[in-house]
Image (tube, rainbow, N blue to C red; front, side, top):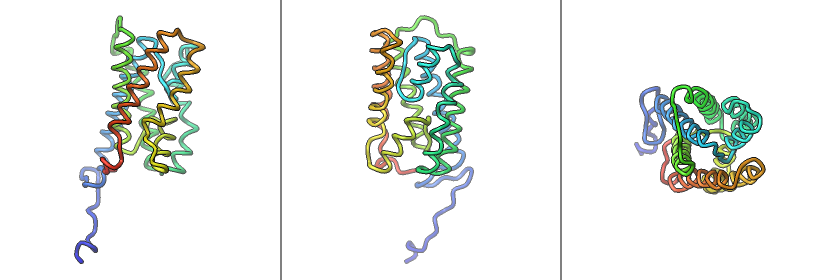
Length: 214
């Protein structure tokens, strides 16, 4: 009887529980995930590779127009926040907005802080895809995302049980198909490898039935 009426311990800025992250843990997860994703994007950009999702659209616009990736990536994600708010809640939307803003910022400043010389495109694809996937995994586990297709993938996973990584892989395929008009076959092949590495990282490691803390 005591268990039935027992109140859950409230979660504050420092304290967390077995069912919920603390505010501090969420901040750390969003910042760390954004840093990893931005580093992965920097590796891909250094090898002139592409990727799927809104990041892929950002790369396409960057290579074709010369616009800043960070600015384009931030703007492309704006239409998705309404879906995030309506379907996944205010907290998810705010954390996702923060993650997108941080990732956009880091991708702008990292090239001036890190000098990446000659890099093999295959190495850039593997490590870049892994870094972005790991960053997104950290964000997913703190109920955030990098916006765009990630919001849609998480929504479909929550509603229908579809694996977020596999959903995003299919959406990424559409973006990479468009890249055939602006890139060489080798660049596209390496870009596909990066997308597969990213999404397999998510598909293998992100399962809501294995990880219940929110």
